Image (cartoon, rainbow, N blue to C red; front, side, top):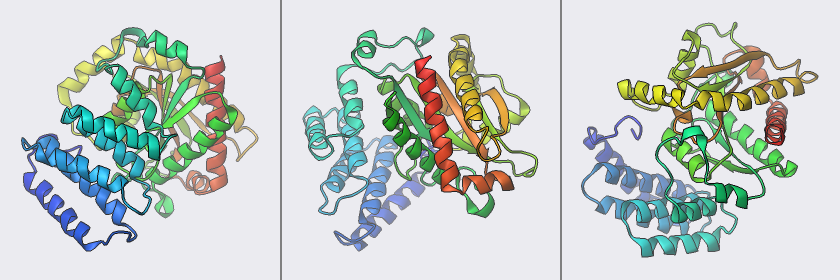
Length: 369
């Protein structure tokens, strides 16, 4: 509902969901397995209700719930993310600077290496721009101050959004996260870039938040990782392809766009107007060198492995996750989960590791050129 009910049209559904989480939370005892997951999504539900309702008390409740989760006796995989969400509510929605500062200090103390610390410091020092800058110009002083370029890896889908589901129940959301984590490890080992992930576990993240994270980090490259599917002709469609954003798209590409954009409403004429402006500003042209570098390098690195990596080309399409980004950005469709040979490879951890290695090395070569 987060992406399909931007207003409060489904008020009864939201209230019912909130009540369900309240009841479930009371049933799960402190320290019991799964309590943190219930707490996290209860807080998320309160936040979403608060964003749609004139009653700001829901936002207060959500922020407090996020903080309470981070302070649970039993360590939680949601602790770091919860403090970040609490900060966003206190700072951006409730204008409670004191509470926001307390959360930042707690994040520093509990998670001193948190990827969110850079994001929060950036948000506190500058106001992230809301429109695409002409020629993707970045804050020169920040870029000069850092030693390594920044790449943001975006594992497609997550949470209630499975993405494509293929042979043997392969879920796109799980495989993209696996590849992203492996790519992150390889990049850290190579030392050619600072690397950040839009999501680190199986959670839903609205598409616009993915681009906002990348912009807040002043990234030099954004790579959205996906898996392809063809339910109509599963035996004919296989291989890898890479996309850049554009208002232009082939009929075949539009089918992929429809699936990857499925978690948002139809944006209608406003989308077309925005895409036209984006296209005129050269988003596709700026991203094209990165797309071709990654595409050619990955295919080359697979020549002697796994029978090669069949290529489907570098293409263009109106992918929502690539819109509004202030850096070169590509969407990688690794293979088809619906093709028997591709699915067999994707189910093999070693293949996913090899994909991650090839992607990481290609990213390094792009930055070194």
